Amino acid sequence: MSEAALATVRNRRIGFVFQQFNLLASVSAWQNVELPLTYAGVGRTERKDRAMTALAKVGLAGRVQHRPGELSGGQQQRVAVARALVTEPDLILADEPTGNLDSVSASDVLGLMDELHQAGRTLVLITHDIEVASAAGRVVGIRDGLMTENDNRDLENVR
View 1 (cartoon, rainbow, N blue to C red):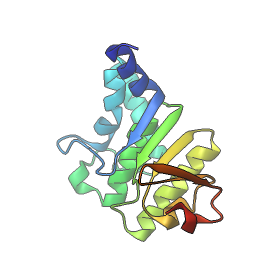
View 2: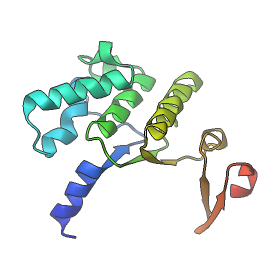
View 3: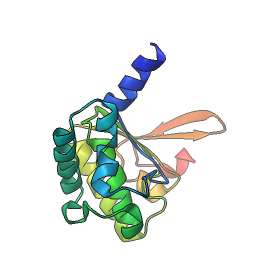
View 4: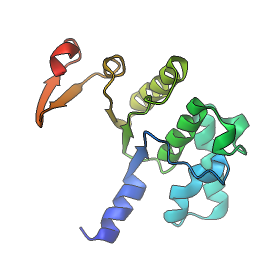
């Protein structure tokens, strides 16, 4: 595929949740969420409507005007998840989505990830946390370049 075609696939078919959130500090939550739609050429009204819907799905309907610095870490991660969802991707890649969160916020984000999975989304979640991995139905471990796969009953052997 050409670089342009690959970029289109990444923008429209894959949602990314980054460990460090990667939110733009100078714009509101809804403007951060609409960004992938801007790149996809979606019109202004539809972008805002879809961003608001995605933020409502992650429980932030009341915080759409807030900038990232005005949100807790858990709320920022929810904005990042909403941004990953707004294009309605087939696949969501989440890199340590709970790594910077307290236990309550981490539990909330994992619950949201489970809801997305139950709704038919494919999720690939990267984590070093065995408790987080235990929430998955399938665990693939990588150590020294070798993959191991478990069905989640024996996570100690994934290390």
